[in-house]
Length: 208
Image 1 (cartoon, rainbow, N blue to C red):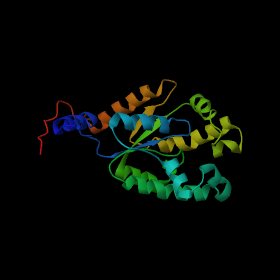
Image 2 (cartoon, helix red, strand yellow):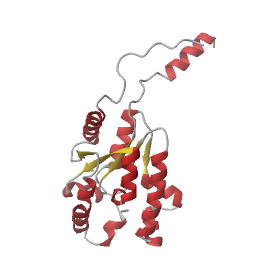
Image 3 (spheres, rainbow, N blue to C red):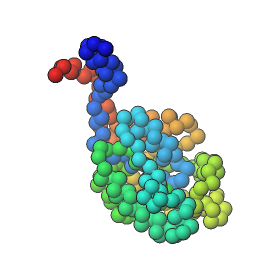
């Protein structure tokens, strides 16, 4: 293939994109079933950023599932590991979208670190939405300790006042995930005071 054709092919495969204008990692908080992972993946894709799921990272570090950690070591041991993993993720570069577990933001040290190194977004969901979503998955250790409705109601009472300390609050409801992603993007742009991607054409690159 002639050199000019190879250059054209490489350019086609790697289109130039505007630089990301997000100065901090976006940290999604909220109860189980609020949509942190589903919204986080889509948000990261829209922003062209990496996505990190704290629960997945905890399982990688422990070499077992969260359900197994709860059964073997108890919730206190899980929370200690969760705290360390989130602290590590918040120091990672480049900035990214981070979905946290439902109890992570309850830890004062984690909240302080999120406030320092990220921008927190509470995905607030009503009880019926949470019940419908969590009912589709059977791997929620906390919900196996009794009646799911009563447990979620108790967690909402305990945690919602703390989640309200997040930088931003976005309602997560029955609408499609893309709708909630738009809400999060609008909230972030309002928070930072500018679009999250540069606008307008980029200058042409010069061949070396």
